[in-house]
Image (cartoon, rainbow, N blue to C red; front, side):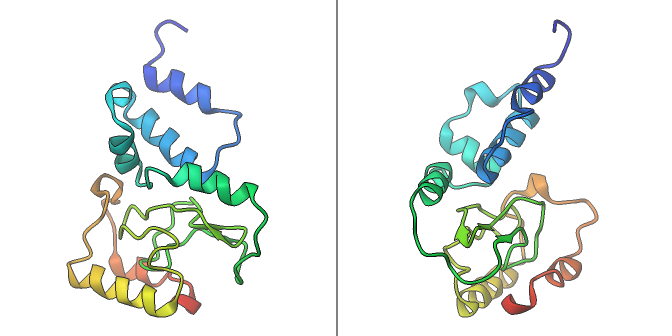
Amino acid sequence: MSGSSPAARLQRLFEGHRLTPTQRRIAHCIVRRAADAPFLSSVELAEFAGVSENADRDERRLHVTRRPRFPGPDEESVCRVCGHDDGDLFWEDGWPTALICVCCGNESDVSDTSLMGVRNYRGYWTGKGAAWHSPSFKPRDWDILEQLARIPAEWR
């Protein structure tokens, strides 16, 4: 194992484990920032990963308790506000995952539970110039119109 980078060693630690969406985002952030990771506070790590500091705890609580499910699809990986989709789930099994969109900054279950809330936040975000919440995740060839076109029809 000598000679392998800290990022490669961290990547091997995460392989083969089933992680929640929040844990996947945090793991990805730790691997990308392997040299800094040991020195980051939980708040800094959550910010870099684009998740709420309490998201993993809330995620586990929602999956452990038996509650009636929200109507709608079982899984949603497209942000209802801006259309960003990197594969992480905003809604899983009808429940919000408390994932913060790295593009618009919406946290699932905060501004995206009603069509009016989604439209209000989208208007606010675009009115402020559609700046990325986590700019390091912004693709070089990003096209806001292409992304907005990916918003599910029921949330337009």
